[in-house]
Image (cartoon, rainbow, N blue to C red; front, side, top):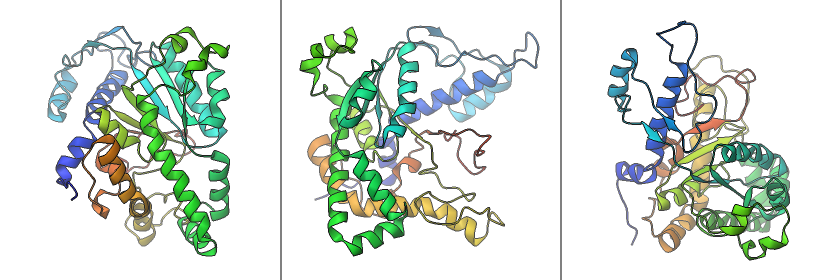
Length: 347
């Protein structure tokens, strides 16, 4: 019998770490844009880039933002004063070489700020990652085959349906590979690299990678094809941050989901049929995935993660958006500005 919980309880469980992370990022953003009232009011006071692990960082109390902070539940300006700990950060990536490289740069930046970083992606990318002295964990799946299937379907839901009708065995093979990828995400955040006993044979491994192969994540960064990233974060009660160079999860009237096949022409009205179709395309896409993989993921959640199952209906299909998980769009706002109807956690 399925263990069903209310939507409110599900959101609490799924975003246990994410909401704390979201409040922290909101506070950092306020500090970055705060004016120095003691000096030139045109000069913003900014921390330089990421906050370094092990360093004191105190958020100053500012009279103009105190009331808003308390209203939003962020705090009084002092409750987030802390020494930032060193974190084990796992970056989950499903995709090709071009998907992995930007996250290698991010991993190096996090390392420079004192954090331990592991990139979990397909085994074919192992050399790309370890040659940069970044820890690695192999996810299942063949990125070349996944890319080929996407090309054959035209990157559209309708194309996937046509391909399945033309050759049902293709859909069966794809589903099997995706399920292997989804379940391998748990080892990525909680187990040593299977090749860790042989690290001494690799010349590009740093000392920490050789001496401490055990790894349990404190935070996860993932791209959307890692469908079970939220589940493994729930199991560990840690925050999740989604990053991708395409819009995903969070609907907007300005343009449709990349896999929808809808036109990218600018809608004539924000309340017109095209605009509404654009917005709905994000939930529809997640609904299709949930209908296809929801039962499998539920069995895996209960059997492996020891978590309650997710009700198998459309109200729970887009859990990332429902839980307000932060999303970083990996493109310049000069190229494509942030949609006006995106929530604050999307940047």
